[in-house]
Amino acid sequence: MSGEFVFVSCTVNGAAREFHVRPEEMLIDVLRDRLALTGTKLSCDLGACGACTVLLDGKPVSSCGTFAWQADGADVRTVEGLVAADGRLDPVQRAFVENSAFQCGFCTPGMIMLARALLDRDPAPDRPAIRAWMGANICRCTGYEMIIEAVEKAAELTAETGE
Amino acid sequence: MYTHSTDAGWISRTHRAISPFRLEKPETLSDAVDAISAAGDVTIIAGGIDLVRRMRGGDTWNAVVDISGLAELRAIEDGGDKIRIGALATHWDIETDSVLASKMPDFQMAWKTIGNIRIRMTGTVGGNLMAAEPGYDGRVLLAAAGGSLVFLTQRGEVTVPADAGPENIPPHALLTGIEVPARGAGIAFDRSLKPVVSVAVGLDGERARVSVGCAYDHPQCWSGPVEEIDDAVAAFPPEPRNNPMGSAAYRRRMITVLARRLADRLTAGEPS
Image (tube, rainbow over all chains, first blue to last red; front, side):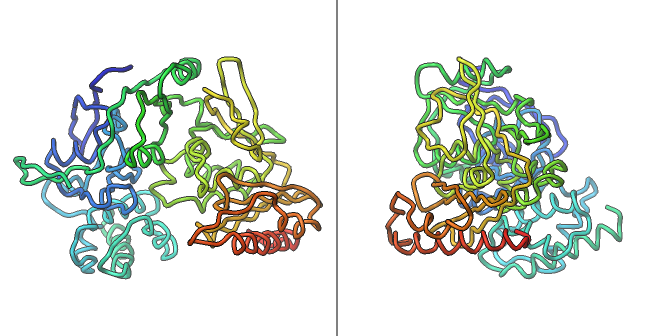
């Protein structure tokens, strides 16, 4: 396959989407620019900080370091997709709010998606596991302790509510 | 940063532009080899962790060959005296594979230290090795384990020991996987001084393999009787890098210290 544009068919937050993208177009630009899903934040633009983390078939990826065509056939979830149809927040989102696990909030969507990926695999991670997993993303404000506590709280909320 | 106005307001777009390229998606191994053998600047993408970083830094390619659809390159197979790991296996695949857990737990534990979870779930063995970055750990670990790289070329399969220099990599070759001896050699790895130096030691009976990363343009390896490690490693022929991050003398000293420490740990049977 070659050519100026690449056809991409995927689901984004449960909705089927189709695009023609240039090969060099990044996933974050499609999400933010074409779909107005601006919850996903562009920060370092190097795949290092994790602010742009989304889930690609359940895996946390840097959307600034992922070509849009790499999402072809995949299920993409952004922070907007965690909210239930009735507006109820995901347990991870609720835990971040209840624990004030942010200051400026710019890293928060990426942190939440990273935590969601962890809890999807391990509903009851211990603190070392949370620290190791969440160490992938960078926050310049909070010092991380409240973020780790929020992930612990999210695990508790998930266990209590079965969400 | 580039911004423009949309219905959602002002949008910032990725600001390190990647040069346009043609995307190729071969459906077979032979098509992939043909694609990378074609004239012009051609490179391979699998997970994309390393390539996107390089292209953001200004690397340009006429064509990028996406091999991520070649599912046969992802398997981790128990071959009895060796384990074959497909080039498309992710670091996470290695980290969670039951065969490696039972037959090569040291290797698995050492590999688990690569990158963060986002990188490990997307980045592949092949990408780590073929990037040939001095600071990447895959080649260091594979060399310490006595492993090799298996390539497919238009002339057939070529196997290259992991401790061989970059000049031994055949041109226009597709890395299909790696082979790791499963003879119980223990491996210990110390990356605590990265990016100044990293050292892995593999022990198989009385023989040791020492592999050093970060300190040279590509990993340097030595193998011989374990009691000769100190003198042999101290006399590694190439001079380590000498820059403000770490002098050559400091790196050489740390290589010796870490190699001895890791060998002692393996000899004592301590977990890596």
